[in-house]
Length: 104
Image 1 (cartoon, one colour):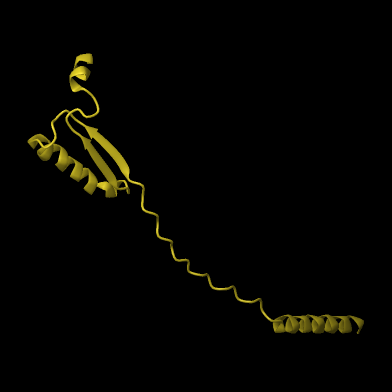
Image 2: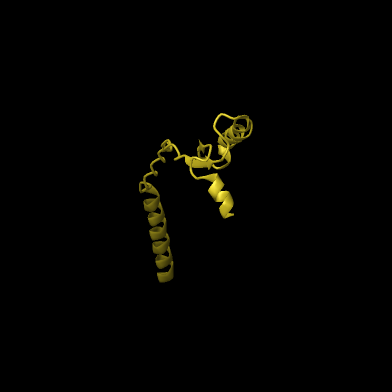
């Protein structure tokens, strides 16, 4: 009979503990994640290219070759993700081409 009372007592304690733990309030639900709005990126710093050549300014060669080339480079900047600025220095503005040719 002693074993039976012990078994019933343990069964009742187990049943009471299950009922009590089921009645406890559940943990609060996590707060919904806030949607962060992306901040607009600062405009990219342009890549500045300087192009020096010995052709006089305003010539057909500059208008037919160099300026279309510069426009192609500026239009293709999506490949690098930055704008490109090309500044021309025609007619040997940076150096004396006659002296540089002799040095070669």
